Image (cartoon, rainbow, N blue to C red; front, side, top):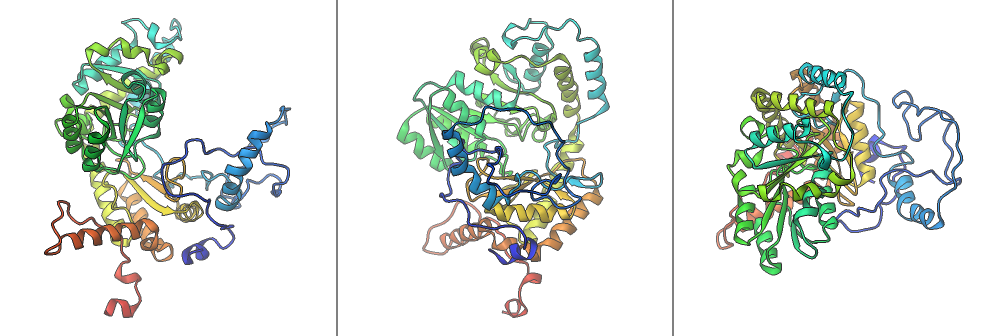
Length: 499
């Protein structure tokens, strides 16, 4: 166990990490704790396992009910795949259950980038819609009439984005799954960035297409894959949801066009925050007319519960056959009216967008100066990639002890040894909160030693590779040497600074 882990969490059972190489997350790995076997160690009555006194909410008491029990196969899977993680990595408590935030806590664990949730215009529109909802029929969206609120919102979104048609879905996950199920074919190669959202991978599987992963944000590798496997569909995120990296979209589009591929761009984390009026990265780069399909969740900057994808006129009705739209009920009128009000706010939110980008630049620069390995991204999502889950829990707990709350990500949302604490910024952060955050991360750096995390070592190796490649006689690199996390001079021994 590392020195900083000993210093911060002497009582947490460390144990070895789970076996397995770093790679594509296993989507079958359980995320939620099952009922623990009778042999599990007991916990004090009325307490949450692993909870710190006074910081965790006790679960509500419930009357026991009968259950027929699990199959032996499922019990064996729990014991094999989940229990080692539960006991050795998580210390007997669910990884997402940390302290309970208070009213003065700094909340960096949501996606409301422009701080529109609860805006009076949205709330009043939803209340009025609820009052008038009596005659509404809840049904599959394929049966909605042309005069429904859903279709009106779709038309308004299409006009705003300057695309032919928008299809509204129940979520961003449903949008990605449904779109790929419609446009991909069995055994068609779908070239997908290795950090693309899980819903895109699920869409590929729903279409029975063949996933062809390419290295994250590497157009040259994508081009090699297309030359080897032929035309298909290219799938990328505009801003990647775990690390905040911006897609090199112009280069990706050019490679897709040269290879005869259609392209899907997920704008979930760039819609509202990037481009003119918040229309996204495609619009910012002037690429909307060259991108075949745009998808997005409306649970990020829109702070709602929906998603959508765009389609050309010839797919307008065929796309209504996407499974999530056929086999799930439509959004309710008050939800759609709320999204409509949010759209009007986002179109006028230039000041909030500027504030968000200024905060992203300021805090990323501050963290890099302190030695935190955050160079992989550039946008409003900041990843503190620690590595092992047990170590990441310690970092999460240390942040929460400073009243800073992020979201812990681990497999299957990350690779097995790539667990991280994700910090998402919002335009609503006050100057006082920003200063408190900077002080907290400054105070924690000498103990956490982020420059020793595996991600920091990888970044230094890449930077050294760029440096060597740029030496005379070694060829030239087309890319600038990336920033990397190093220990600040104030954290080094005096003799190291002197030399």
